[in-house]
Length: 400
Image (cartoon, rainbow, N blue to C red):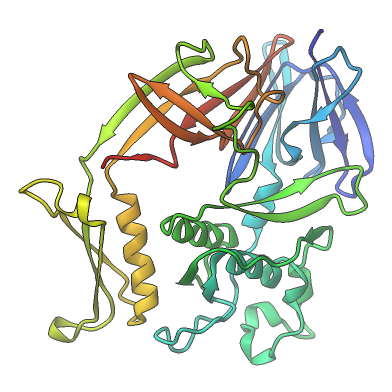
């Protein structure tokens, strides 16, 4: 079967305005919990109006000669920049922008910081509670319906506005994006993020949850045929399918002929097994918290433990300091790391036997690790489309 592709262009009201099946090149990259980016290079035959800011690009792929089509990545791409060039008779159009997750990066946590950071409180700019609930609230209070219905004393003047300004709090809501029900299955966190970007705040929460061995993934999924085409979703532990056991198991290795490259690294160079966390205060009055690894790794040799230090001087709250220390301990753990690039093999193919967000296995030199398909990059050049799938063991095999 011949593989085909096409691009659908929509205006910012989601009206279809063009279908393009001839481009010079395309390069679109996505990663979990981060803003994706694209570059589209086109011949000069297209009109300027197609590429107005926030017009939408959909990338569709067919594996069966156009009989069925699949929207790549359950996302779309928002046009931000357009570059029209002419150089010695060569003319081209270059379009760049971001994916749906980039919409979250357009908002900041524009609420007052908490008056007393030591209190274990749940507020607009400080979240104390289940991590997935915190991510949900960050969206709801900064992009969703929660931008209204608050105590006016909680809102900075730069948000509230008045009769002389063109803005009001309701301008912060993205009404085309719906939300799934609020989850509350993740571990407890306590973090502050007044005036950070909402995307950065969500990543901070997800990292704090991952440090407690509970991975959180969030995204805005797109379906142009749905009455609500944009849906903000949160997944606990895994976005896709677990393909590490059973009949649907997928292994990436040289023996399975489905890797373009693969490497294995044993890492102790930045290891710490005992983290000292410094909170507010000075000298002997300073609030300190300790976070240590498990007994086996704490005293791995006669020359252990290995100490580390991290500061969070804005707080004396022990839960917040504990979260800070756990995050640093997680970052500096000893681990095996796999890295490489997957390719289609005799029994594996992206989009058919595994997909974005799936958990799979990789193997090299007798060490087997678990990894997730958390990133991918689609390229198109000279009429040939390819998908590069860099993998690395974010769920690292711990060195015992």
